[in-house]
Length: 153
Image (cartoon, rainbow, N blue to C red):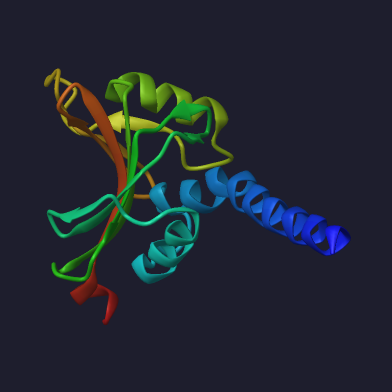
């Protein structure tokens, strides 16, 4: 009986570890618009770790203390299908310019961001793949957003 319980504990711990060890890659590629930002997949993926903390603004919001390419996170959000956009993103306590630097230093590709309007101090930063970093209060929000209507074309 003890061997059985120990085996179950190792399996559960190993499964959780495998999920967390791939978090940066799985979520990171989607928020950088380098893989398909399929909300259903990410909702299921994140729900296996913990249930969403809330549902508002057309998204499910998951609390997170993980890191994405070395940058700290506070939340991950996934579209809930109630808007014309399909998106996945993260909220970081870093300001946008620092988040852009952290991602550029650690992301495998597509992590270079430029200000949409260089003259504007609060301008959104955009990558060549279409990912955006915007202010979210004093924090920043990194996300990939696709128009679901255009995806059908």
